[in-house]
Image 1 (cartoon, rainbow, N blue to C red):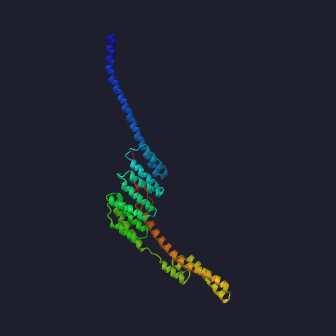
Image 2: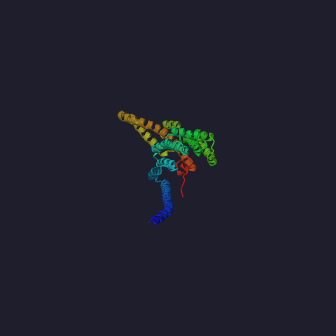
Length: 319
C-alpha cells in the first residue's frame, strides 16, 4: 500500500505542472480573444459613427460618438470622438451648442494635438453666426499659439474673409496678403483669392444719395436710376394722380378734398424718396452678396461656405 501511494504521488508530481501550464495557456488565449474582441468593437463603433457623419446623419452620429466615449474611455481616439461631437453640431447648424462643445473640449483635453482645430472650429461657429469680431479673436489665437499648424493658415484666410463678409473688401485683401501662408497649396489658392477680392472694390454700386435726390425732383426717377422700372412707373403715376387731384380740387375751391389729397400726397412723395434710398442700399447689398457667393462657390471649401468635412477634419479609419 505504501508503495502504491508513492507511485500515485509521483504521477501527481509529473502531471501537475503540465495541467498548470495548460490552464495558463487557455486563460491567456481567452484573455487575448476578449482583448481582440474589445478592439474590434472599438473599431466598429468608431467607424459606424464616422459613416453616420459622412452620410449627414449628424444627430445620430452624436449619439454614437457619446456611446464610443462611454464604452471606450481609455481609447487613443477619445479626444477625436469628443471633437466630432462639436463638429456634428456645427454641421447640423446648432452653432451655440457647437461653441459650447468646443469650449468643453478645450477644458477636457488641454494637451490634445486637436486643440488648434478645436479653436478654429469654434471661430467658424461664431463666423456662421455673423459674430465676426468673436471669430477673428479665435482665429488670431490659433495663428499666435500654433503658427505651424494648417489651422493657422486657414485662420488667416477666414480672418480676411470675415472683413469681406462685412463689405470691407480692401481690408479683407490687406489681411489675407499681410500674413504668410505656410502650406504651399493654400498659398497658391490665397494668391488667386486675393486677386478676386480686389475686384470687390470695383463693384458697380448705386448712390443712395443720388437715388433720393432724383426721387425728390421727379417721383419714380430714383427707381428708374436703379433699374426698377416697374416701381418707378407706379411711383410716378401714383404721385402724379394725387398731385393732379389736389390741384384740380383747389381750382374748384374744394378745399376739403384738396387738403386730404395733399396730405396723402405728402406721404406718397416722402415714401417715394425713402423707398428709392432703401432700394439703393438693397441693390448694393445684393451686388456684394452675389459677388461673395461667386467667390465662395469658386473657392469652396476653403472659405468654409458649408463647413464640409474636407475642411473640418482628416479622420483615421481602422482596417
